[in-house]
Every structure is written in C-alpha cells, then in structure tokens.
Length: 99
Image (cartoon, rainbow, N blue to C red):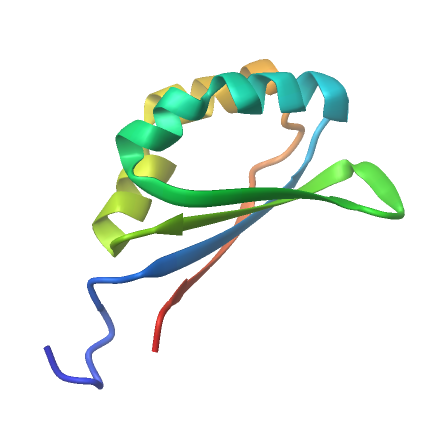
C-alpha cells in the first residue's frame, strides 16, 4: 500500500462523543458492553466527561484496523446498548489512522 493511500490497515483511533441522559446509568451500560468491544477488536478504551456538562461524554477507542472499527460502529448490539444507556443524539465520530 502506498503512503498516499486513503485507506491504511491501522492502528486506528476513534474519538466518539455524544450526550447522555444520565452519566451513571450510561456508564453502567457501557461497562456491561465490554463483550461487544472485545468481539469488535477494540484494543484500548477510555471514557472522559465534559467538565462543564457531566452528561456529555467523549470515548476514545483504539482498533488494530479500519475494518475492526467499521465492524464495531456498525454492530446492531452497539446501537442497542447506546439506546439502553440513554444516548440522546447520534454520536459524532472522528477517526484517525496512524501516520
């Protein structure tokens, strides 16, 4: 693959943000969804809160490949967990591939 190729095999970092109804309730669902992350190949995960709005979350997930990231973001089980956790709006995702 050339260095100018728009698609690289990885590693991949996804920054995902969205508002939640109640952080504590969302966090319990997020923690229980670890099998979904493992199945999709999430290699590392961190959760942050906006200091001005504790119900606005920023999640950092790392993946070995773009395919793993796409599989995770498209997983119906993830969408179901997000609904159960009280996600209030579609997530905003920013994806980066190691350069």
